[in-house]
Length: 467
Image (tube, rainbow, N blue to C red; front, side):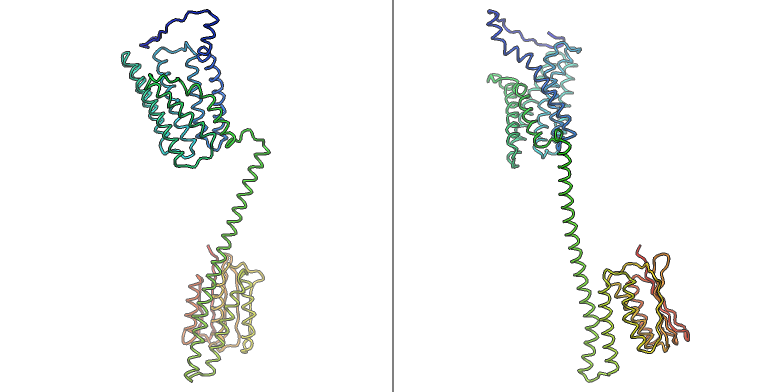
């Protein structure tokens, strides 16, 4: 008899010879005392292992719910072994419902985590329902007169147990129906746990069936031990040696490095292929729009009988210069601007000196120049080529000088100057200057012209260091 509890069970006495009675009641006495002590100890140890697994396992949710489930069974064993706890009868009734509703709630979340694909919000909803049910039960026990204060919580518990059992069975059935499962031992153990919970719920709803009671509690220790063993062999790392762990991690790192290296090579190959394709299209455009247009004009002029030998020679020279510039720009791929300028100098110096002009080239021994692609190098060559051609054709001077200067901010200034008559803003030279200005703008470079009459022409191209 306990304070607050409205009912008590009175069993008929059994009178017999002590030895026979001891043999007859041995199983009941074992299940009522020693069994709870053994299962409580084993499940407490298992719960401790599960708690450690939370920090060492690949699936911490599974370990967390296993730990809580073990805690529920340990609390259940303690409830029956500790006959005189320091709480009143009302508190003991609340503890009873809290423990007996925690086990099916934790079991549902345990099964949901084991599937590997938890249903969204199922675990939070399960916790919320458990807390709400316990709040209603506690309120009835402490605030509602008996026996209603106990009968309503008992009915809530029966419904809660039945709903939890159905939810566990449904969750497992849905998992097996929608996912291929190769964890055969674990699947079998989960099925047995669900069946045990369903039998306990059926006993509360249909007592006339006289099914065995407390199936989950009696089988929990064996089922959870087997489940933990199966889980450890698949996920746990605690008992592996340090060398095995290092070897495993090194293998993962090596495999990952290999995958990253392969991905990097694929990326480089793709970028290289895209660059080659883009360069091929650029060359085709240059050939079609530049060389092709000039050659077509000369061919049509020759067919019409209007070809002027000096103009044809000049046109062919322009085509040859353009082809050389294109070849030189391609040869400069992967080289510095300093090397590209050296190539241009080797091309242009013989032509200038053959025209009777003196040629001077000033450049520092080392040049910290911005990196340019073949397209930009070609634009630089074209501007320099245009400036030299204008000086040869229109300056009337006797000397052409090229000066390459580096600035502290990383910019490079290229100056082409002559000692001719100046005034280059008019006539054919003016149109050449306009072409150079357009090319410099496309290059993102500074462009300046000084051409006062009688003082020669000075063209400066400023190549800026990229930000």
